[in-house]
Amino acid sequence: MTETTPDSLIPYDEIVQDALRGVVKSVLQRIIADGALPGAHHFYIAFRTRAPGVDIPRHLMERYPDEMTIVIQNRYWDLMVDDVGFGIGLSFNQVPSSLYVPFAALTGFVDPAVNFALQFATQGDDAPPPEPEPEPPSEDEPGSNVVTLDRFRRK
Image (cartoon, rainbow, N blue to C red):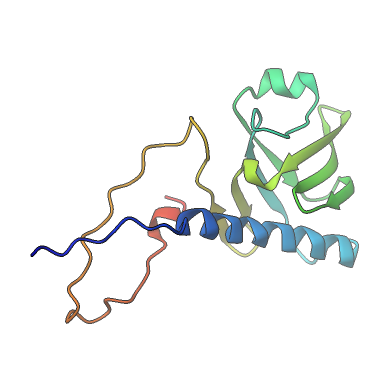
């Protein structure tokens, strides 16, 4: 009898991705509550521009047809967060613009002030092929209950 790991009926990868996107939501809510970014903190937020629910001006969509990264640092306004995503006002080449980005569209979040980064798996047809899963350790191998998040780390 060979032992194989059964396919999970619980979508753990999706649950983990949602939880990590919740980190971004919590951080943005904290910035709203505090009224400003604390200290030297600033954020680079990357997202898929054609993801469902993304609302950005046409000139930005034309310039960034697949993905764009915004910087939240000194000049932003109307930052708001809801259960689905966040809205923000930013200037691009001196042109004020309003954006709305669902958390599901996020591909990355970086706070270079503290060397913190999250990279998100993309969902849908444009998702990269899944990485091969490592062989599960035998039951008597130490550390057999350790979970690694290496595939989600920025490379």
